[in-house]
Length: 212
Image (cartoon, rainbow, N blue to C red; front, side, top):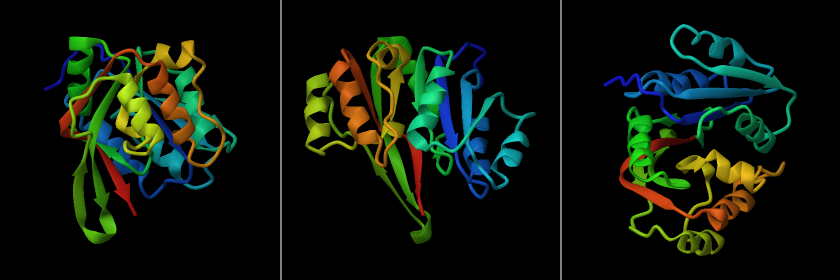
């Protein structure tokens, strides 16, 4: 299925020396059932063949490629947010992949409820063990306070890649990533603090986290 309708999602992909993985990552975008989304790729000062491999996709995938000096994952994501033109933003690490119906499932929830945040299930792909397991919220709560409390207590993971965010939630509350290790933790709980409407996708795993 290929919808011509404009998908209100910008997918932000920071890249730093990922020449061995970026092709699989981008191919998962090419394989989407819904095609008309925006892709912003931030090259964070790569010195390998990552950019060359990204450019090899220019005939198969529409994307913005923005280059910057190496600044780290947080600042690279911030650059992507500032260059996103769609209503929602999502994050994809350049050594991971997304399921082929990622955009389709998220778009359906956006159309039905216009949430501030969507949580979704994901696969943990332990390539070195040839093992894949599914993880998710496994509850029906849509209370922002529930998520805020459980992220702080680490009952719910803080990884930003397993969620979709309304861009205005980030911009209006000045919620940018800090330049630090584990930048998700201090960032994600703030997004749930300010969110008013949250939705979940529990059944279908949309993200493939490649643990190597």
